[in-house]
Image (cartoon, rainbow, N blue to C red):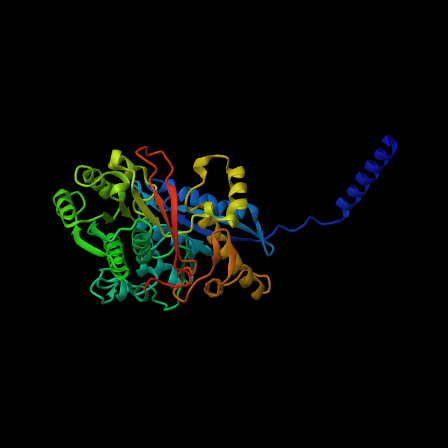
Amino acid sequence: MRVWGSLAVTALLVACTACGSSAPPSPARPSLRIGVDLPLTGHEARASVPALNGIRFFVQTHPVLDGFDVVLVPSDDARDGLPNSKLGASNVGKFIADPSVVAMIGPFDAWVARREIPIANAAGLAMVSPATSNPCLTRDVFIPAPLNPAKTAITCKDAGLPGASELRGGHTNNYFRLTTTDELQGSAAADFAYRKLHVQRAAVISDHEAYGQGLVDSFSGRLTNLGGAVLGHLDLEPGQGDASDFLKRMKGAGAQAIYYGGSSRNGCSIRAAMKSIFPPGEGTPFLGGDGIAQDPTCISSAGENSPGIYATVPIVDAASRPSAARSIHDFKASFGTTAAYGLYTMVAYDATAVLYAALDRAIRDAGGHLPARAKVTAELAQTSGLAGATGTLGFDAAGDTTNRIVTVFEAAGADPRASWKLVDAVDYSTRLPY
């Protein structure tokens, strides 16, 4: 056996030497580049860095696409700890200036998207966002008439926001997202409160910003349509005054729950104030949107009255889906730390998968060459029925996801470090709540 092995190795070495002397080296593969724009530092890094990890993991496991090496170009759009629209616009400008950048993933925030979309649209650069949920990024209607308590549509202009037609000077949509929109968040909270918590009478508080107003209006409209009632609405300027008097009036009127539209840095102290007025904990639910979901700041502000806080997020919880189990297992084995994985990791992973599928079709149509950006955009618009980790993926004519699932979480207790519990998922994929 030893003699056979020695002869075999010698023959192989001779053959390889001969091959090496006569055959030219294989040419390097061309590369295509994908821009990534996220707030990678500051307050939102706890959610956006795990999202970037999801993008990286997909590329790590699919490094070559149709003969091209795939290269990510990550850019941070945060400054002084907060997402910065001017910096985001600058990042997009750099993507556009590089002809090998065929599309981008991001951004994470609506106000950054409003600045970036017109720039990318003019250049024909496709954008796939794993996180933004403001309706006006894709439509001109902020709240549909059936969800407005006044039964008239609230346009984006009415809400003080530019609508989709204003953002897209080229009149061709280049913006796609895998999150549902905020009016569905508010609706899902109402569905959950009415059907699962048996809340029929609620009071609402908003933070005087468009995001909070939209959540409150859609929650109010949906709860009313279900047969419930909204007993009062307080619009609370951030950092000015408190809600104690309003809460006392609502307790007297018979409110069974409080719905809050806004962010945790402004609102979860309201939950602490409820303790001396309403039955504490789950006895009086406190509901909100993704502005408070899974945020340690919210739990710190609410203190001992943290139990009974419920919050929606406009995405699928991948950890609850059997189809995502293998990808999550492999991701965690690759990245090694618990902090590397987050709520948006698999959504961002799927955003990359969607883009790859569109790029594959565009490259094939271009005869194996680097595709035109406009062709990538056109292929993204055709996405339908794609099997992803978070479900069946596709986009409607506006660029919104057709996988319209809103997830509901409950705070586990007063420990800011404790993981929130998954308690429900409201699926509007086949039927909208309006």
